[in-house]
Amino acid sequence: MNKSKLLKRFRMLSRVMSNRGDITINLTGNRCYTDYNSITLPVGDLENPDYLELLEGAIDHEVGHLRWTDRTWTAKSYEKGAFFNAIRNGIEDIRMERMVCLEWPGAILNLSKMVTQGIKKGWFSKPTDSFPPSLLLQAVVVYYGRYKINDQVQLNEFCEIAIALLTDCIGQKPVHDLILLLDTIPALRSNQHSYELTEQIIQLLKKIEFKPGDSQGNDSGDSQGDDSGDSQGNDSGDSQGNDSGDSQGQNSSVSQQVINFVNECLNADESQLMADLHEQVNNELEKMADEVRSSNDMEQLIDFNAPLISKNDRGTVGTADLNLAKRLSTPISRELHKIIYGLDRKSVNFSKQGRTVEANRLAGVKAGNFNVFKSERITKAPTMAISVLVDRSSSMSAVEMNGANTSALAINLAIDKLKGVNSECIYFSAGDLYEAKCFKSTTKAVKDNFRVSSRGGTHTGLSLYSVIRRLSLRVEQKKVVFIITDGQASDLKYLEKSIEMSELLGIQIVCIGINTGMLYGFENQELLNIQTVEELPSILKQVIKNKLIA
Image (tube, rainbow, N blue to C red; front, side, top):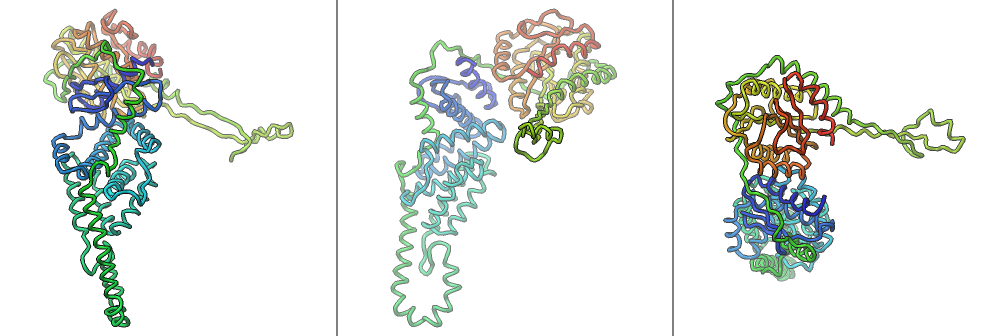
């Protein structure tokens, strides 16, 4: 993939992940940030793997802010001071990145790689007893949240050290209470909730103040319980005489240490806090972006909004041959099954060590062939998600619409019979899209939804864009779009961009033409042209192998 395509891929992924069609992706300058309407990324050496890892991590993070961070509460947080905002920002980053990973599993690896680089570059450092109080408490929040909640296991050691050091400073019970608060992060649903959790942490700190008669933090109960008898009984004289002054002095000293710790946290400035990870990433990307910059003449993506998808349609008054669809689904499924499950591979290797001995090879030991241990490796066929996109524009005659409906129904019925393959069926014209079948439902349960009539224009490009975005968020390993149509798209400029988007994201397109020799806009795509629905199984067989398994 050349540099231009790689840059476009980043921008495409940002659009897909943000679930918004109005996001502007700027590749310019030397900063990486979001203003909640756009994402700006610096362009560096695209052959540098460190640069690419940081860039992908930055995209995942910034897109997460676009979707899940309310900037109103960020602004309020800044007004509360450096320490408050640092804690809130750490919590919000953890909460937001967790949401990103739940919806976009590929982000897990990208964000983890970014953290690994952060450790290597010193952005995340091992806590020591020389850490200022504010930095130590922030380290517990950040390391615990990223390790325990976001599974960034490379921070395990740092997390344990930070907790131990904080316990030495303020006691076990306050640290335990802090951890209980941090454990609520997965339940947070907004930046406001991150702000409110930070307020609870601040209140916890303020309540730690040592009270006369208590030992440090959590030990007051043990001190008063276990030792009271001995103190008042056997050693009462000594305790009241020799030790009272020492005890009061020691308690006063511990109390003052805790008070000082809390005050230093609350009054900390930015120099006493961990720099924001993504500010560190921005600075590093700026250093790396010394050779390649975004040029003003770089082709910009056309901004367009995807049509809405409706589950209800007033136009389900057309016809479909249900019996024919059922009959055709069997040979279609058979062809798909042979191709998809033909990808199951079993490789057999022999070595000098192992657990299973191949008896037939023992005779060769005398000749010096000691590779008698057998090992097998099975590679399963990839999972697939298939969207069937059906033209229901007014150019489709009643006969052609019946053929398209029957074909779409037959394909979805066939896919339902395949393990690890899921499908949806979407009808398009010039208005909103109609979802005849979603990925979760079975085709048999919604078969009547395929009786669709024609109307409106042919917005193939916009409709394909919507389907590609939906497919991109699927967890299946391979994604395919079947387009059933009779003719020319009325939005060719959008169609061109949508096809380019599918290529960049690795989504295959299979075109099925209904009584047409050419589909304008799909000149570079292989076309299956059918005159009757009965031709569908044999026609599909010609290209399924190349398209689905490419």
